[in-house]
Image 1 (cartoon, rainbow, N blue to C red):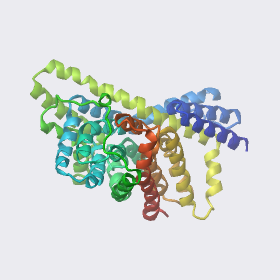
Image 2 (image 1 turned 90 degrees about the vertical axis):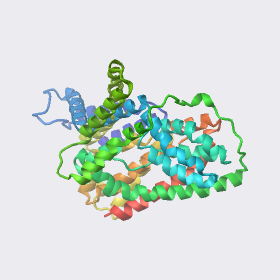
Image 3 (image 1 turned 180 degrees about the horizontal axis):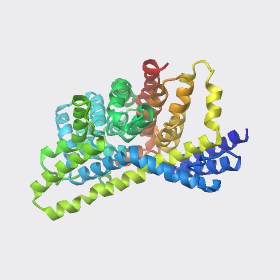
Image 4 (image 1 turned 90 degrees about the horizontal axis):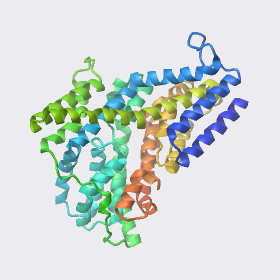
Length: 457
């Protein structure tokens, strides 16, 4: 009983601190370390004799080493390489070119409400190129916002659509999909299978549903609020790049995706992973950029952007996964996971209950803190262990939690993407959230129902 009480206190404390915008990585890491020390103090061995340091109180630090090693040799390194590639693409202007090319045809559409679902879907497609929700919002505010306003679209409608563009687009390049493939299918190189066979079957229909909801909800809110079409824009928030490279550079950001799908579908037996494919694309882009500029010295210096981006991936995502793994290992060591399994294994409809618990936790923390991915990375590690013990499909529990984690930030007034859109449009974040609420909540409910229907056992 004391183990459960301690675990609940620490988890509630961690959730409170994350909600108060304390750094999620430090909070999860500290919570995991405390649980490990409490487990040792209560007589629960953290490591077996062959793995132990010889002094039980030093074993948590051995565990830190093993978690870092495991993550870096699995999904962690892949995530860092993808971050590095994305940083290099941004530096040479390839991301901006891709966005400009894909948004140019929209200038021919003159109906504001027809543009709403079109831009929502296009924006989600562009998240393949610019994975940061806030970064994509800034780029779209600079490129598409004037187009949307020129049709007579209100500022709040335009802002709400842009704020929801980076949500649940199925992509093998997503850090969360790499982690999910590794934990749920046993291998990060099966990320294409995970995305095509599971993620896309839920996310694509829900994206269409959200596009429809956006159309009717924005139209209704404009009529209800009698919103003026005139709103000043804070141009200081926008980073408009004019020195763009040639148009063919627009293919570079999506080249890894193209090659991943090509090799994954055409050469099933080929033993090449996402890291190798990304490096192939990087070298192609480097050679082309070198031939265009003719400046070997400058091009070689620009390569450092790739490694700086890898460091950003380590700091932003891999460290979060490590911290979340620490928390999970702490819960395991103190015996809470076993207690949870024993408590739910004979409950009727346990799969739906687990889905609601994990997705609800992600939604709650995500709404309060502006990001639910900390919850996703924390519990994706233990979901397979729990679901297998109670004969429930892991996908039916993990997938809706993952999708909820990505959707919820668009209704959090403290989320970076909401703050960016509100500041650029000189609006109140709450007003933006009111406009995003129905499409996002409808999307979350749709994800839960469709995931349970397709994969529930």
